[in-house]
Image (cartoon, rainbow over all chains, first blue to last red; front, side, top):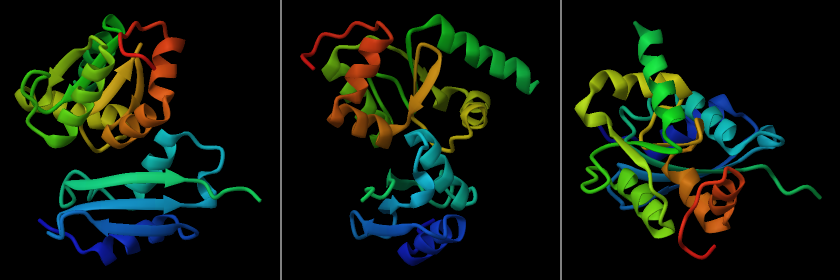
Length: 79
Length: 112
């Protein structure tokens, strides 16, 4: 049931093309990941909405193939 | 059928100030993410109603559709979905969770 980190990144990018995605494999077991996603699309959205956008990009894999993906989202700092 | 279950969820989250849909119980969480939220609420001394989704597969699936949120745990305060494990942890660290509890008039014991 494990998923490749690169695949996770590609899925997120397919849903949120302007995102900067950083994936870390938390335990080195290919099953527990953390994703840090920064995107201008998040601006003005609540944290729940931002996470929902990431979940949508993952196309139903969250909670199935992907058991453990910690998500942190942010809009880019405005200059 | 679905609306009956959604009504049941609505009743649960409106009848109780703080509700945590989780895997296992507050005394015996059966998933690390659920355990993490229980621990935060316990540290804050917030009393909450736990709903063990492992005991009810219909609720387990319905709660994900209810919020369009694919994972459990899910925390509700005063009828409103606040977040899952990552968001609650982040909100706790920044003090936003304490602020939300204050705003909604929920008492808790720990110093903010």
